[in-house]
Amino acid sequence: MGNDYRVVIIGGGIVGCAIAYHLTKLGEKSVAVFEKNYLSSGATGRCGGGIRQQWSSLNNVLLAMRSVKHFERFSEEVGMDIEYKQGGYLVLSYTDEEAVEFEKNVKMQREAGLKVEILSPKEVERRYPYINTEGVKMATFCQSDGHANPHLAAFGYARASQKLGADIFTHTKVVGLERLCDSRWIVHTTNGSVKADVVINAAGAFSREVGKLAGVDLPTESYRHQIFVTEPLKDFFDPMAISFSGNYYMRQTKHGNFVMGQGDADEKAGINYSVTFRFEKELSRKMARIFPFLRKLRIIRHWSGHYNMSPDAQPIIGESPSVRGYYYAVGFSGHGFMLAPAVGEAIAEMILYGKAAHVDVSDLNVQRLKGGVVKEKNVV
Image (tube, rainbow, N blue to C red):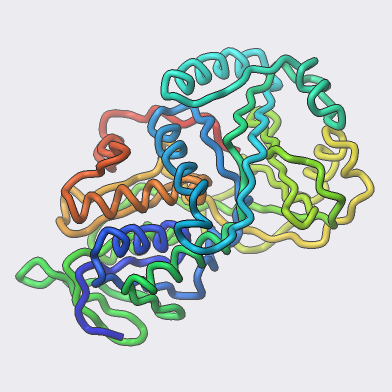
């Protein structure tokens, strides 16, 4: 371990590793990542792996569109196959009110340059005859949406950043942050202390805890989110299917397994890695009705991770207005994986150039919440 860095990143998930990669790619070699467990051990390695550009807020649309450009060249640029597949996202609506919102969303998305289709229930049935469309009011589809392997993406960014000069320390927890009179930091870890000019909080589910180390109280809370995976079938299901009113999402992996999940409105805030039979029972019944081909498949794995939620379900990105030299990329509310490439790039540009060059993220600073909350609606 060195003892002096320009930038220290707390958190070794996809966001922290993406920031490290973009910093080193842009020429900043004095970068360290501290992860208290192993890389992608938190929300990254426990997420569904979806990559979606269809959002109700323009900020999320623009970040996701920029991220897709990075995902499209990930294998060539970073040097790792992340099982990336642009099979599209099929977004199904089951209420008239939501269908009206979808029409508005599509108009905004198209104005931003995204190619999105609106499908009637009959068009969904014709295109996907193996989906039960009972109750479907309408759907939207974006072919350039897709999915990838979150573990491989995080590992790819980590390995590439190391080749470019970054240091990555796993099983090393940051336990304290001390501000020096010259505005630099002493970062205290379980394996020693280092100095840094800039500290970045990319701690996912533990973002609020890490924020308090710097005297910053971030308005984030973490909630358990459960997922299970089935035994495999022959690869045939291209899109990621999702419904906000139906409360589900599902995709087929490269190896034929089906990964699926749903939200729980009764979930309490806090760190909880347990799983429940109630979840399996509820989701299995629902998915077997909507996707009849799943009925005879067995569940082979079931795990839980966390959504690090912000008040408006949009990420909190930028430099603390009260503590200079302290940045954060937190509160992704279940979509950190799909936004990570663009966010990593934006944070790196802010540190090195003073502002983000490709996607303006100034509206995503924590100060926005003082003016009220306009919530992102497209979250399961």
